[in-house]
Every structure is written in structure tokens, then in C-alpha cells.
Amino acid sequence: ERRRELRSAWQELGTSERFLFNKLVTGSFRVGVSQRLVTRALAETYGVEPASVAHRMMGEWEPTAEFFARLVDVEDDVEASRPYPFCLANPLTDELSALGTRDAWIAEWKWDGIRGQLIRRDNQSFLWTRGEESVLDRFPELVAPAADLPDGVVLDGEVLAWKQRRVLPFADLQRRIGRKKVGKKVLAEAPVVFLAFDILEYEGVDLRGRPLAERRELLARVAPESSAQGVVFAPPPIQAASWSQLATLREQSRALGVEGMMLKRSDSVYAAGRVTGTWWKWKVAPYSCDAVLIYAQRGSGRRASLFTDYTFAVWDEGRLAPFAKAYSGLTDEEIREVDAYVRGHAREKFGPVVAVDPELVFEIAFENIQPSKRHKAGIAVRFPRILRWRRDKRPEDADTLEQVKSLLEPAC
Image 1 (spheres, one colour):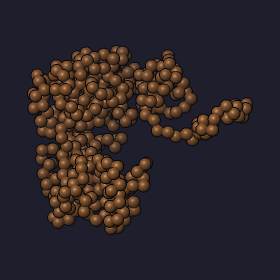
Image 2 (cartoon, rainbow, N blue to C red):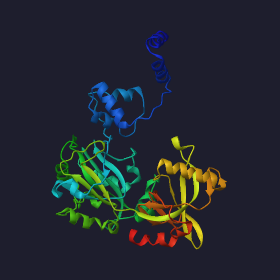
Image 3 (tube, rainbow, N blue to C red):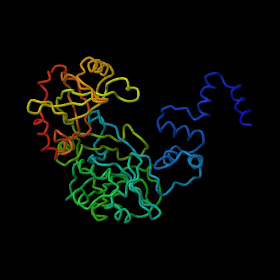
Image 4 (cartoon, rainbow, N blue to C red):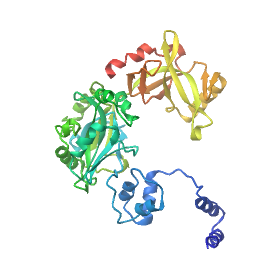
């Protein structure tokens, strides 16, 4: 019977359609599509609400027939552990005045932690990261406060290393991320909190379609600053009567250990994915320094044939000390130009890494800088990327390690 169906399909389909059909049947069809496109296609095909499909695709699941049946079932209930798709912001590029009146927006500090949803359903607690990883067991100090939340609650927020009412550097939180079991010393040195900035569900009711201002009022009652042993709490929005006052407060970001501010329309709903026009991240300008390209490595995917992953160094007592790796920030034309340079100026090779003549200077941007015993330079930078190619500078014009380390004091 299967053979008859296959032959029938082959006879009906054209050459290109037959090729695609065979790929699908044999399981060898591979094409990159966004989760949003998959969600929309399934919703339209099976008559399910897109929000329901997106919700069911969150968390842990296996691509089985049983899961697919639940995924497209109009009546299917969501499992207790299932998080909601995260709402994401875009970088603010316009002037503040283009946003309209100040009172139409809620301002919050942009924290540098692990975005997550803290869930309390059916007398069970879960903590999901934006990367759809369940991590509550890695943060034991959150277990009891999560259990104190009312049943049927989902909070959106940030896991932060926190001590004496102040956020600790992300490097301290990083010590907790890769550990399934956390020792007493690490727990004492880098305790964590869950700082909530939104409530997505209350008493089992989905609140995402309600205005942010309404959700924030409820959040303040569910997780006030003084609640849950001071471990799960919602700080109030930033108070500023005008855009200029808000801009002045934003200048304190580095001193407070935050990345800048979040601006959210008070009437905004909690949409799935990255939204434009209602949520903006208004980050402070990154740190930057001029550094010399010393190593290169081939990229991956469509860049596998090009040298696109670079190591940069700054001067330390007359020698170039590597301090950062970066692979983003150049145009396609610049990538090809650097690739040609690497091939023509290779000194030696260490496996996939090629050492090059140290002649090209680039401005490297990064979000934060911390002392590090793991790195030879004694520092670790966060989110390094290429800001621009400094063709106007010679290698000897690059910054020194001492100059880069001078950024440590305001950062810590």
C-alpha cells in the first residue's frame, strides 16, 4: 500500500516537487526557518491560536508523534512546567522625543543577569531561562521563596548575583551557571535573587494581553520588595518626571552595576518574540579600546571558508598581550579583505588557529570588564565585538593593558 501511495505521489508531482517530497519522506530535508514562521504555519494549518502553539513549543520536548498531536490540539492544556515565549526588546536608536510623552512609558533598570520565568503551578516550582533550560536546581536559595508564591503564578525577570542590596558583576553569576551542585563557599560569595519585572499569569489566568501598567500593579502586590525573604521581589519603576531627568539618571548606570534602562509603553501587551515600538533597551555606551589583530580562525556555517574569528591584543611592557576574541562587527567586504590579509601574512599555525603579522588595528567594544585569574591578561571582557577598523592607526598606536585595566575601577 505504501509503495502504491509513493508511486501515485511521484506521478502527480513535478520534478522539483518530487525531489522535495522524497527529501521529506526520507527525513533528509533540512531548511532553516524561524520559530515564529513555524508557529504561524502550524497555527494557520490546524486552526490553533498562534500564542498557544508558541507556548507549547517552550521548554523541554521531543519531536514525537504524541508531542505533535498535543501541539496542534485545540483543546490541549498546557503542562504545569511550561513557560511562555519571552517578549524581547529592540535597541533604542531614535531620540527620546520621538517616543512621545514621558508618562506613556515605564522605565526600568536593565540588569545584567540571566533572563528567566519563575513558575509556581500545581504546588510545583520551575525556573526557565530564555534559552529554554530548567535551572531551579542550580539556584537552591530560590526554591523556598518560589514555593511561597501563590499557586498559578508566572513571573518574568532576571536572576542576579546579589549581596547587601546591590547587584554583583556578571562574572560572579557566571560561577553559578555551569554548576549543578553549588558549594557553601560559592553560595556565600555569590548568592542570587530573582528580580521580577512582569507577571504573566495569576491564579492560572494568562495576563499577557493586559496592559503593562495593570500587570505591574498586580506584580507589586504579588512580589513586593519586602517579600519572599528578600530573594524574589519586584523593584518599583524608575521615577522621573521628564525625558531629561531620565537621561540624567541613566548616567548612573555603571555606578549601579546595570547596563542602562528599559523603556516600555505602559499600555503594551506581553507579545511573543522581539517587538518594535513598545519595548526598547536603552543601553549605556560600551567600553572600547584599540587593539591589534594577532590570531585568526575560520568561521562556521557559511563562513567556514573564511577567516572570521579573531583574537586581539594590547601592549603590555613592549609585548602584545591577547585579551579578547571577536567575530562580529565587520562588513562582508571587510571580512574578505581581512581574510586575504590573514592568508598573505600568516606566521605560524596552531591547529585551526593562524598567527598573523601584527599590523592591523581595530577598535574593540565590550559591555563590561572584570579581573580574571583564568586569563593571562588578568582581565575578562563581556560581549567583545569589532566597532570599526582603525586604518588610520599603526600597531604601536594601540592601547596598553594598563589603559584597559584602568576601566576596572568604574566597572566594579
